[in-house]
Length: 301
Image (cartoon, rainbow, N blue to C red; front, side, top):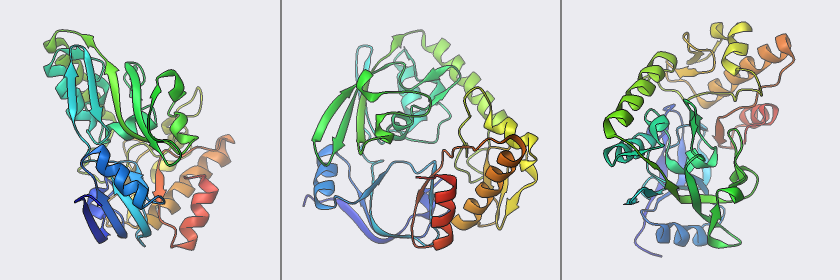
């Protein structure tokens, strides 16, 4: 195998935005697509993650291998086209595009996640989404190895893509942005940041972003608030007092605390409105039977 960074019994907690998680049996940190392919061929059952901004890792840890792709972070600009590796964080991508007078990534200025995750879930905000300017995606799968998918082949819709239906891993993407005055782009990013700061918790308060997806034609936050979710807590975590669709880890909470609280949130909306909310949070674990049970009830992948 190539000279690839790997750590055994890796304590992953500080890599997650929730600051929750136990030890991972083996964690790989590739810096190139070639390194990733080498690892995946060696560890075909490995789970793949980026910035772990919407992932809940079990406090009991994970007994398998994990590949963290944040080191695959090259950015190449060619005129109005920009290629970016899956590990590039949203704010860096937005700032790089702005400095080069390219518009289309302003909505990502406050995103904690990386490009791979943003494409995976077709991330959106402020009237923009990741698929708007996308041309093609560099992908990997066990069956095909390295290959590319066009925008149409990605089957984008609200908060989803083909990668959530098939075992496809995103390693990079190419976009066609719109040339625009850099000051106008910066003004829009400042506006977006201001909105985010007033409506979402700072990462100084450990959280994983929106907990549940918005049901079609509705708002998860509004439903949760109307159902009284802001009063809910479990162990060391609680629902954020300023927006009911966020969970804050305020007292060294555990992964089980988070799942128990998600279940309370889910149940209060189901009971009052007859609506079953779909989680945006993903889960890595399997050693705790109650966690497995809750993930099944909540349909967490």
